[in-house]
Length: 240
Image (cartoon, rainbow, N blue to C red; front, side, top):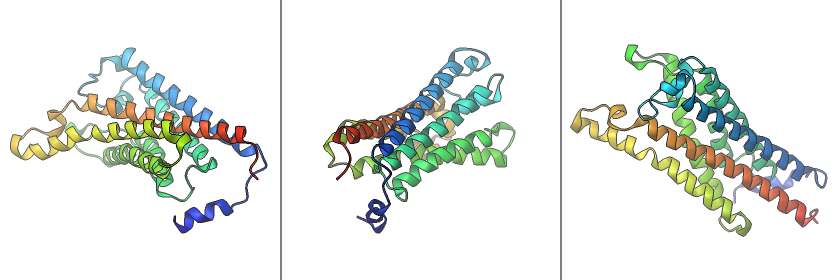
């Protein structure tokens, strides 16, 4: 246990019953925002000009570049804010200390999503741009930070029996998200032999959508975990 971890319990606790209510409110708001983001992004696949974008080859960010693409920005901002609410609930529930690596990584996920919206995807066929580089690396950081942070959080609670269902789901979702990178890594490594650009060697759009879906589910499970923890705290009554 680190000095930071030992310091957390020393913080004065809120009045009895207040903390579970705060955790419940944050978790519910966060999960609702994440669900709304999932619905909006799903709608972009089905209706309007965005429905003509090839979901197998083209990345999700391209929805922001066509008519009606503002819904993509709304969805991603909603996902970022919902994820931040879930993170706040996890910290309030003391499932992760405020100053810890899991919290920092989950925070990087939230910040990365906001940067993805602030700096639009560029058309790389006409040349690179500063905004394009920020967009690319912010999305990479976000997509890696969430599963890594979630895995570390699950590891912290590996001996907590009530957390087992949530921990198992979070681990599976996180490993699935990280596994989505393997075909891309393989395509980059094989480029020297095949000469095929990595973004053409794999179904990039399909991989990214699978990755995004896995990560959204992880956020939802983290919110459910915080909510379940708050309910157990209420059932157990005030601390001695």
